Amino acid sequence: MRECAAPPFAADAPRVDDARWRAHDLLRVARLARVDNEPDWVREALVRAPWAVVRRAQAADGFVAVGIRGATRAQRFGTWLHHQDIEAICSPEDLLGVSPVDDRVALPAFAALAVLRASPSALDIYAWGPTGSAGFELATGTPTISASSDLDLLIRMPDRPAPAAIGALADLLARAAERAGTRVDAQVETPAGGVAFVELAARKPLVLVRASDNPRLVEDPWRTP
Image (cartoon, rainbow, N blue to C red):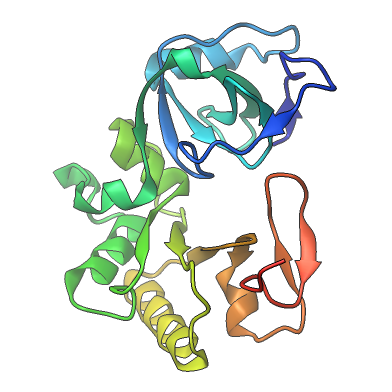
């Protein structure tokens, strides 16, 4: 996040990872407390689409770290939402059954998503779904993507995949991107945290894992500590 609010809890308060909220989940906001450094655009954004995206940061009990999306890429604000102010939750995989409105279907990001959903594929053994602008638009009904938007995906991989499975996924994502004329950017959720799929496909000796406490380089994001 380009800007973040100060935590509304003591610096020494115990931090927790609440399994009810996972990175990239979308939360419908009933109320959001104002903070001193809140940008002017935040309230307008919540009127337009009262939703927040769960971000990777630990919070004290009763709170969840979220990001607010504005009308432009530069408008991103990290803040904290109290559990009592959450009306609904929508995960990326919940959005696979949601279609864009008719006049938005042909946008490249949605076209790539349609290719991936159209037939049995290497994705079928995983829980997965759209995130980023495409996911936000499907969840909120608010026009968010443009003709130049990539398709962002989350793929949940609790178990280590075989190299052949990674290769099949790489081929599938590349075909969808080529057919739609856009880029497909997938993040894999592992036991250690989120890893860019391109790093796994490249078989790098170390991959960057984004976790709720801190990002770190690891050899194997599926290895039990």
